[in-house]
Length: 346
Ligand SMILES: [Zn+2]
Image 1 (cartoon, protein in one colour):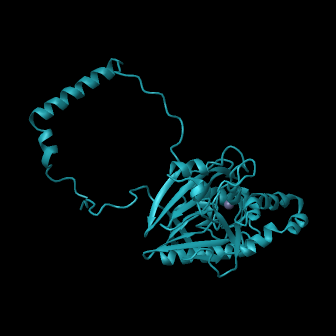
Image 2 (cartoon, rainbow, N blue to C red):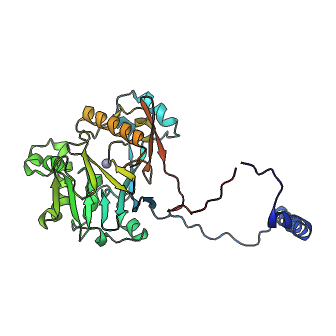
Image 3 (tube, rainbow, N blue to C red):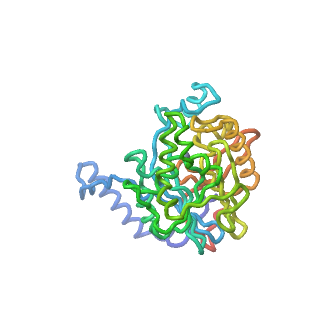
């Protein structure tokens, strides 16, 4: 950039003559007021709350809105494959030295112009006061839950399905049909599976069944086989490991793609540099590691947009490959669509 050249236009005029004198007088006045401890007005009360949790991105003709449902803390001890001191060192590189790693619950709304599709629904009422913000943030983003016609679940863990229902187990999405991979539904929704599950795992099966129950009863829960697409134009791919039916969804419009990869990654500081690190929630960790490496490699090669349910909000970015390692390149805040003519400073 070159800001060293001659100043031009109005700016040049304002620092010459009267404009410059006026600026000096103002600056002197301010300096005197500060020196004497006099301020002209009290600061207003602080707002004290976060701005609404949504972020918008255009992908071809599709409008993608990331929605923040909330967060919890995950213990680094859940990460397996390196020593705890190695994991702690990787976290420290990103200034994380707390006992838990703050971990977001992201969901994504896609308006294709023909359909309003929600990918995952957040943790809803299942984990306490730090989650369940999806509906409010959806409204802040300009949509109503009743407008959602299709819900695609990446898998049936509680932090993805609990948002389907409210605290009274009533459906939040009155007009939506919910889709999950058949392998996923078979694993979690079979009543026999709940009966046979180890005590510690029973709540996960029960929550998956309770959250989907009103949709199943209304005939609005559907499954699809591996290789099938639940929605025309959306590519669904079975990436088993984290759960038996974990699925990624790829939307493409006007030659641009965005891949919704759900829980193929949980930790930004560790799992891009070390995709071989698994997490305690994986049903089959070796399979999950393979799925992660494959999806990371494909996403890096194709340079597609990627979203993840638990990366820092909005959980949208690109993946770059660096040998056997990867790097997350988060989207930056900016205009929804860039102007036709953007000033280029050279
Ligand atoms: Zn999850």
